[in-house]
Image (cartoon, rainbow, N blue to C red; front, side):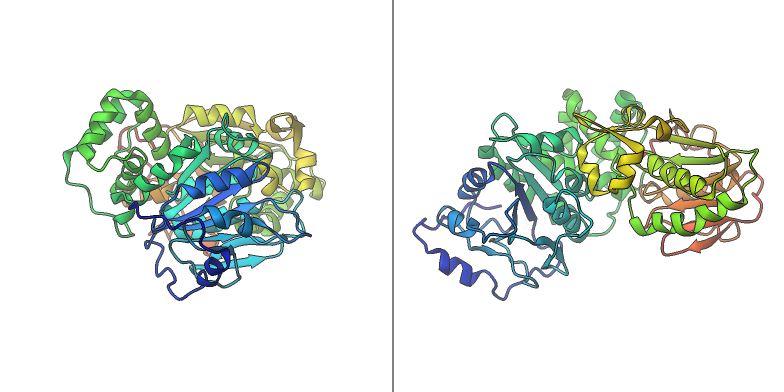
Length: 513
């Protein structure tokens, strides 16, 4: 981001609004960063302070979300116009996004992005507490990926925490205002507690962080998987991680490794890989941050709703109806991260068993290589932001409200065994009815993916169900799995395993989400 001359504050707001919806839309997600800034109570002053320090020619798009009274016209544009160096106006449905422009959410509407344009919609009728910032951030993560930026400013409650997690998972940047500086620290503290924040900064330092990120090589590289880096520093970094963190990332796709390393370099404002390696050798905290980024512990309750609807409407009713009463239903959630998926599947099974009026036991094995993620899952205490993903009736049945959030009930927690487990190096479970391993295979090299799919075939009983992520498949294992739904990546075990197919002589590998 290049510093440029700022226009004088006397420029009229009306002129800014007329220029905002002109003719130069973003062509691709790689054109420029798109920055979503969210706030509620105390947000106006924070918006004014931050926006007034941005250059007029940052090359970025800015989307502003503040909790507004849906029944009154907003004064946000008029109040902010004298203090910002670029055109600003209320967002208009269908308007193409333009760099160096600011778009403000209208009252009573939800703001999102799609097709490189603004989308306005009515708040969902089923929504309890409105979460307009989360709504925008999720669409931003889907649309712009690593070019998505989230900034969380002063505000109460936790809007933004869930969406910020999606931004981070997509490779984007998440910044929270320093809570001690914020007039109301609820929103930034909630995002920090959720593990979604990359940088915690006072307002005065946020523009520089945006500049470093927006101008870094990380965003200049074209999309798609990159070839293996030739610089020996990449291999040195993998060796350093193996020696100092006990995680071996050698089984990851080289493109995944490269992108995540470049992302950490961008956050630190470092362009040269050898300089970053030097930083890692002397900064244990940064080494830990890199390991966390590579483990990609990002998930949520009922992630990919249509896939869970398929489980609830078709697969689980059939399983429960036909299951012998003297045996437990056995489930393995591999790469469970912080536990949301294991709890989601267990909720659906308990609901179906109750609906069928059958007395069937459950055994759910939830595993991950990340000890911290497993500890979080075992505790089962989640921020109130899960209200976005968990319907009120399930919150009431399966969770207990506490000061710090929602804790899973004993009914939900009892059937689940959380344990540290290396998918590649440790022995698999067996005689399973369901294996769920979602959004993990995509990070592994193709030959490792096939080994893991063979392992799952071994672990499942005949007719068992394999549940993968939206961008994953069983690959060439069509003689061992048939698709229940190719769209939702749900497969049924068929055929028999072949001799030696479950052998994984690949050494210890960090393959947790």
